[in-house]
Image 1: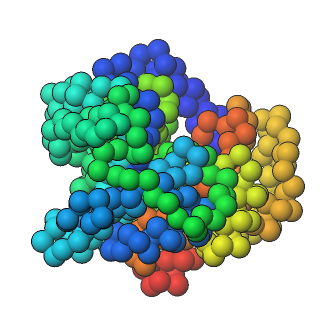
Image 2: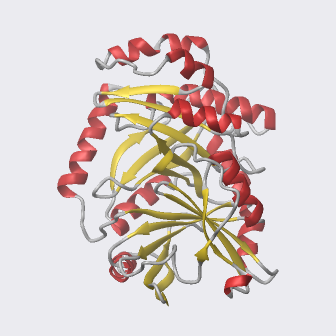
Length: 387
């Protein structure tokens, strides 16, 4: 990350903590819901490969006649995998168009009714009016709005609920619960939008959600010989929710953003970044379980790392040989450094993937790794014939 980019982060963080609007206090990410073709099999995959644990279930046995959902948990991360149970469900339309993908980014709030009222009066399109679900364990209030594409932000108020996940679900007991891989929480989630739409959605997050744009990258910073993109990072006031937004930029060949839009067939969530305290252990474990990661940067990349860290007076605590063997990338800013790696797409369509990240003080998003990352993605695009 350059000095200019660091100043942009610092200025943005000052704006967030000093001047961000407080009409939408967000406590964190509550859950992420995927619409998938086969929730039972998808749940097995995320348990086996990522180390998620069985948590809650809703289906025919619980009285749900039109859809089934499996809830998985690992530390503070909750994934909900939902499948329709008949051909008339509108969930089918989503799956046919997009393939398996993220439908709902649920945000934990103290007052879902207020969150809905404040965002809709500022221009948000309603997905679901405030709804109260009750059982013997209390009540949960939910309300939803649309963001880019068909993606939804669901506001979830659970202060008056003591049960498992939410009403309509039961605890999911399973004899098969592989050990966790060390994933802790969602660090950020990245959305891809269409040509010339990034600034529209940046303004939407500013006006509707009270977010602040604290870091921006243009096609002069994020490019290779073949492709480019532009990106702006949005954050809420307390910094717990961060949503980078990408759009394509002109290049000699097709960028990863264009490829995503072609196959997802609309804007949507490109990747979910999940944090770990020990990326070497996490990635080693995930590789052994069958997760495929993007190809390793060349040896020259790793030879340059000590100099990049020295520029900011940081010393790498991890074994660089182990990082290189696993393909883990390193970037730094004045606050510290970070370690990150990206999976290959986890669906057959080249759309959704995951990032594994370990922050050692750094506040950025790996700007110094963008070129190496893009080149790795382009090698995969070339194999798919989509570059």
